[in-house]
Image (cartoon, rainbow, N blue to C red; front, top):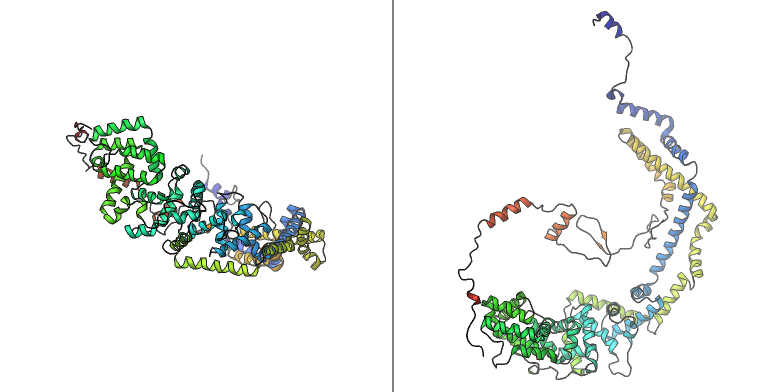
Length: 640
């Protein structure tokens, strides 16, 4: 179709039809800025904000003031209550000092105060601090539930003034402070002492006699740290091992040292003895071992080592069982080093792994290479050492107890200078508190009086004390609760909607240069005292009220709980039941944590790793000996 050019020119004179392109629809920043400037000139910034606020007001239609008023009224009460609670906390030092006793033993504050005063008295007698004694008593609660008060009992008829219970706390003090042992060690040693029955008295008496030979042993062998090792290993023995070897407690200290020198423990050696008591199986394995090795399991005197082992196990002779294990390693060590099948069979005979047997052989040789002084302990007997007791007495002698205390305080004391000073400070603090509250029960009396003043003696009186504080706003403003809620609701609702208006304006025009000035002015208006004060009042909903020091803006500071933080990272709270891993900056654990949290760290190139492994293996040649059965040749000599 042909259209004349004159017609086309005529059509171009008509208005354009259809939809504009998107780029033609967009308003320029200059246009928006001009529009905003015109509105600001016309209405002012507050007027502009009021227009937006009116939009939110129209939406709520006045339905929000009541709930906002209730929330602000509750928030006001909570803030006032927290102020009194914080004051009470600052005013109840003695109660706070014993608060862990409340939780651990499930007792009230007054009873905890009585108990705490007794612990302070014991602490003074034991030359330590009251906090430490409280800690040890709580640890012993696992061993002796509900016996917290009985642990503080003293016997006036006893010259020492202390019973088994209070001496148990003294032992805990020595174990934990001076020897650096754990609460489990204290409990284990208490069980061992109890298992001795009438043969022994308190844990302190047993510890003194069990380690009496330690100075002489260290002088004879050059060993160090034997006191701690003996008490630690004895306390770590399982209950069945402790009961089995209780008949010969005098040699138990030497036995645990000997087995440790062999790279094992008395408990593991006892398991070997129990395995050898399966006569049919163990004798069969022993015969096979003799056929494979050409060696009999006998000592230089021709005595059967396995039979000695069985007798020592049945008799509960710890020193004899340790010596039997040593004799087996001495007489059979060279054979089982070179004979694979013999080593395997001896391990089966003893009921242990081949790896464990090989490790004991290596440990025995290492001890031998360390020189005769180091090896001397394996040949020592208890009666050869000065200070060793022939028979346990129910009560250790005064000299033994004194020697034990001196040994622990000096030779076995693991505390550094600064750690000692911390203990000394708590000791002095305990003494100071004792001077101020010398009369029995005086701490508890003071705690109960303060508690009654703040919390009352009944629920009603306790609520009454708080109510007096909650009435302060009403007495200052002459408003009742209904009037206060209405007032707070009006202020709070206005503040909420004015803040929403500022947010809405910010979201709408934040890209325009002039808008920044508008938003900053509106923001400063929301920060005015009338809004700032009402916004600071916040009530809790489902979460618990935070108890702490109230800050200047009325909010409460949370109490510091256990926490962990990484350099440059935020503080993360955790429970005391959680496991915490420490990491040196830049170390492998630190890098692992960084990678796990997306914080960088060294990336792992698995392709490069695989290539390196393949390259290394390409140069490996595995060569088998021509006679792989040489070590298993059976010695056909007659066995007599």
